[in-house]
Amino acid sequence: MITCPHYQTRTCTSCQWLETPYDAQLTRKQIHLKQQISALDQSQLEWTTPFQSAQSGFRNKAKMVVSGAVERPVLGIINEQNQATDLTDCPLYPARFPDIFSVLKDFIGRAGLVPYNIAKQKGELKYILLTESRINQKLMLRFVLRSEAKLRLIQRELAGLLTKLPDLTVITANVQPQHAAILEGEKEIFLTEQQVLEERFNGIPLFIRPQGFFQTNPVVAEGLYATAQNWVKDLPVNRLWDLFCGVGGFGLHCAAALQANNPDVALTGIEISPSAVYSATLSAQKCGLKNVRFQSLDAANFALNQDDDKPDLVIVNPPRRGIGKPLAEFLNNLRPQFLLYSSCNAVTMGKDLQSLTHYQMRKIRLFDMFPHTAHYEVLTLLTLK
Image (cartoon, rainbow, N blue to C red; front, side, top):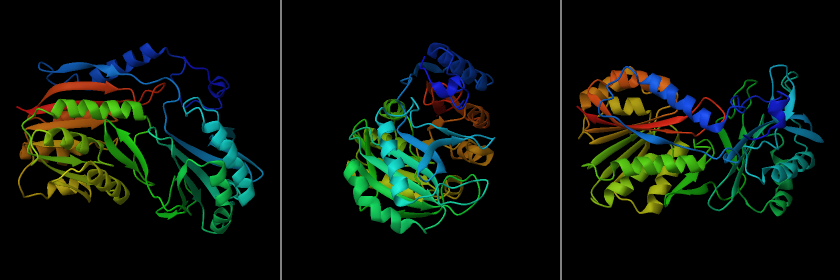
């Protein structure tokens, strides 16, 4: 177990299972997963050992609420009583993040970025979002601002910041003018020439870009993609869809493995975020994969309006709400030979699988993406009955 002073003083209780031994955490999650699929036929289901996480330092991203005063900013969280807690020493972050946050606090003062005061609805700087690439330790920094009023001051101090933090590769200002608990706005202003942070899982280049979803536990994410790749590499697949594809992690891994045996395998990836589609397309180009296209569309609407050749494999990695009954019924009628379902919410996944009445679960594995909490990821392979 790790020691966290914020949990001990109850100023931060995000890691609700911190006092539970790690083996017990995994057992509880596995029991919960089994409960969600208890009503399904498991006669042909193969369970794989849960993929474990490091217990500390596993996150690649910090989302810090900025509060306090401009000369003494606080980076962390604000509780329901409007009390600020500095979390720059959170043990879940990479070991060097505290030193980086110290430099950023100094930068906030130099640039005159007044922290946003929720009660008074005044100030400019709302959040600082910091992301690290595991492969090269390069960094992406995003300032979430109420307006563009202080943009010139940020640009004025930028050269000094880059001197102190030379690993900063991507820097942006995001404008979020609403007085609401919304992390980011639609407008993203790039302050550096480079717009993506490169990561690499299992030899596949993936690109992190502002406003594009990317897993926050890279070691477990790499294991998740590798498992998917291993499960499908020998399947008779010529055409696959990757719905809710994000930056293309699942689709690219599976397409790369399948094209090793059959260069004509075609991949279509669908994701509503244009930023994520940009990153996925860049990854496909870097991989040299052919017959790959990514589109910025609503995944469910795309699937429900397809009349062309059906895929042999459909990958779904939906948000917490799951794929929903209309898409499940569509897949039942479409009848691809294989389904690969990845979920961050086993409850909605269990409901979706009950709707997929034409499919039989074959393999399943739990991935502990979020240690010390009740949350986890799960991957399951289904075949047409």
